[in-house]
Amino acid sequence: MSEQLFQAMAQSIIDGEPQQAEALAKQAVAEGVDPLEAIERGFVVGVNKVGEAFGCGDAFLPDLVLAGEAMKAAVAVLDPELAKRGAHRPTPGIVVVGTVKGDIHDIGKTLVATMLSASGFQVHDLGVDVPPERFAHKAREVGAAIVGVSALLTTTMVNQKSVIEALDDLGLRPHVKVMVGGAPVTRAYAMQIGADGYAEDAIGAVAEAKRVLGAG
Image 1 (cartoon, helix red, strand yellow):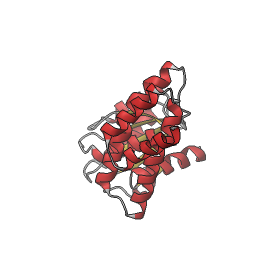
Image 2 (cartoon, rainbow, N blue to C red; image 1 turned 180 degrees about the horizontal axis):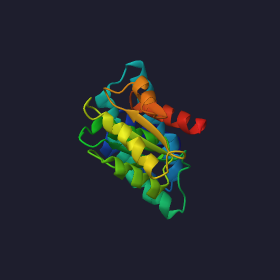
Image 3 (spheres, rainbow, N blue to C red; image 1 turned 90 degrees about the horizontal axis):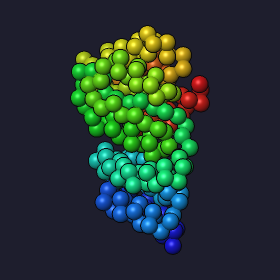
């Protein structure tokens, strides 16, 4: 029975159906299914399939957005259940993400946050138009391993460097990796400003986050 339930969970993510994902998560809780198993063997399988399809050009940005919404709906039900059991998902690390000051683009950054969460990272999303100091203070507060900084405008890209400087000012830079991304950002630019990682899209961000921590 559980196997069919896990398959249905994965399918709800592939189909981008938040209500279905939420209903299946509630069903799992009612039936006493281990919430960690529901996440790992059910919903995450769907996220991975959408990610693979996106990488091959068989899925597109709207598909990723809907899959992300469905994943969020499922995790919102299952995370409190994990907490009740005194359990938690093993996490590769804590990540603070946000869009830089002066920039209010949200979709790319939110997708990165969702995909990182789906992969087990503990994510703190600061939203948009975030001052450099706020990234740094939040990283110190939560003990972040990575700060992810998005910029969608050429005019706001410079603020990614300001985030690195703000982390430096608090003495955090040796311990906190910085990843940058966004439409105008390139790997060459990331290296130029002293970032540790760069990702072109939300799927790439997960692999890059793991690489950056592995390298650390």
